Image 1 (cartoon, rainbow, N blue to C red):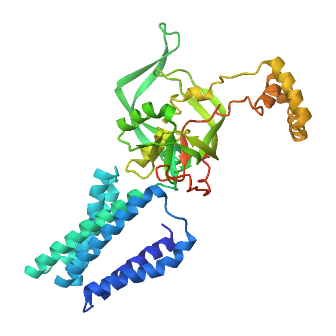
Image 2 (cartoon, rainbow, N blue to C red):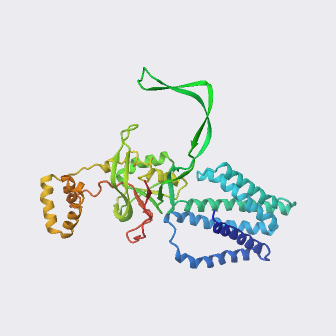
Image 3 (tube, rainbow, N blue to C red):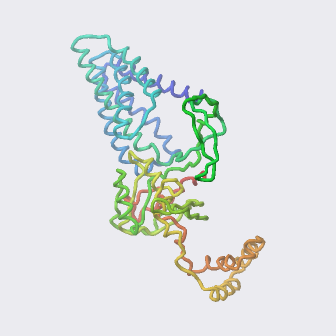
Length: 432
């Protein structure tokens, strides 16, 4: 964490404690709580003009968060009316992190390291120790309201996190080791290599009566290899693939919606493969590796297509399944290989005639063709030269090498022909 970020976090904590102290010292706690909330809204409103609207998939979470905050302020007022600031505030803020961590595991599939758990427990215990000193009925009632407030803090934290955790943000899908290493002691056994009269190669024979300590390098530092920017709304799977993709999504516990009507000329990002390499068959499938990228387009999305929102607890799993370059995606495992097979061809004698017509009718095309001829590989390949014209001919299948999984910045569930969304697409994929 940089010094600036640390200063901002500490400043935020100071401001938060300050407005809580102001409310506690007030004669009318409810009125001053409402004034603080309204004042924050007034200060934030001018800044809204300088940031984009939240992703449409996040709106339900925003609505839920607003409702939860009403309960938050109500329990806050009750706790401060019955208890001291030094008692209620530590309970509210010390219990909430523990609840967020526990419910994050159950509801958002979060996983925390031992070090993270230790930090949460120590911080929460330190804060809670400040508020566990009073006795009496008022103390008990204030404690109950403060704990209720802590539970509500955990609720809006989880809701806010689920609504904004991945949409429109860079996400690392794969990692690789760096060249940095350290030498460690590795326990092994003495061994020797013998010529094998069975295999004809070398035979590695270990002597378990002679333990040894080997000094070996350990490469444990990781860096991102494949980074993608999560779509602000989610993914669309065309109706032709909807049934079997829906079955895969259900197996993984992922949420989706089936579009009841078509979405003509819908703004999407389509992945076009520039290079396709098929691997050898493995476990009954033919894996594929692609090179290419997403490009903004408008496509007709038929009724029966699937919309898979990114705003769901297992959003990271959605990315791993539907991003074309992810190593364990449906695309990489060969489920969409038909999209990379040429189904239509133009006979050479026809292509020769059509190419001459196209050259005569389009000077810009002739210039582009002559520029490509400067490439010796292209110039020496009759098929590549004819394909240059075929790919620009009306007979060309524009769906060739287009992955039938589309990224969307706007939810098609909420879209109507009268409401066109022309926002810029998310940044291109990085890596691989």
